[in-house]
Length: 455
Image 1: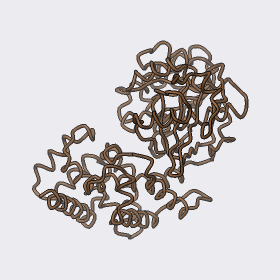
Image 2: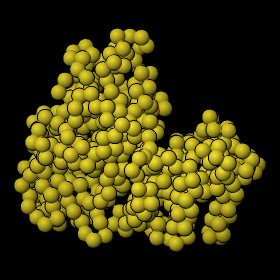
Image 3: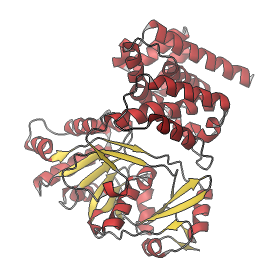
Image 4: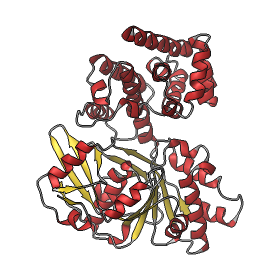
């Protein structure tokens, strides 16, 4: 059996396989954080847009983050890879030939040159929420700042830089993070402010880790072995603020929503989908479920997710035209897809980063409306019970500190207050007695249930 390469990606013809049709000639789209999610999402959108328009100037240049081996794998395949779309009714394989090259993050000079090239008109990033907290320690953000400096020296051509991370108002967050790496009031900082756009965006697609079984399933469809394969659910969504100053590959013709304001879409996803995902991960793992689909099939957990969605809906401000009941139903179907083995452990990670963004804002809105947070508050207790049960220091950047607070006691309410002040210093207004009581009760109840189950 042969190995997937650029020519095969264009020529393979088999049922259930969509061949690549982009054949890029130059780089127009540079991506920082070239991992599985980008390949199953933004890279695929660019592939489809180029194939539809015939404009081959939008090829993708990927820059790896924590996985430099990806650059080697993609080089061996000539940039071609497949997206195995797993559906209960059968698999589909989408082949992609949008990638011209992949650089390792250590190739500083080549990355800066690519960012300085006026043919590069769009930069996207998937670098995780944590990277924005301290830009000086983020290799992708430092590479971006260095590339912008070189672009300023050479062409000074306009550029759009799009964050694709799960942060509210991520365009502003990215712009501020980059600004912290530039000398204030410098000519470079002024040029960036005047010429570089940072549109906000919302991305959504479940992309679990690729397994050997997935590689075999894809090979059965195409007759080719693909070591760059990524796996994805059928659903995909990308909403981008319509503030692209240097054009785009024609994303709006292949399903990308270009809108004046992304905020409503961000809130819909963060508060409905992401909070529900976290509940299934933490509560599901505590109940012994290894995957999200298994947890979603648990009747008791299903009822909890529905209750959480009902509570969130009381203060939700959805975007114009959004079908919220339909969106909720779609989320539940996606979580229940048994072909997507998204592990509870994978989704459960980084709770200290996720809770302030996804939960504290909802609780603040509920309190302002005279409502008592119940399920949103319970999420804090469930996360703490999860950390206490599995005690994995690698599962959260603040795991060691939080576990120390859990071990100190003296009681659940005190622990909850201390932890919330640690992970969300600005959320003191949310820590009203009635809210802390709910959080503490959830921690106590979940921990007690685990002790009974394991005794």
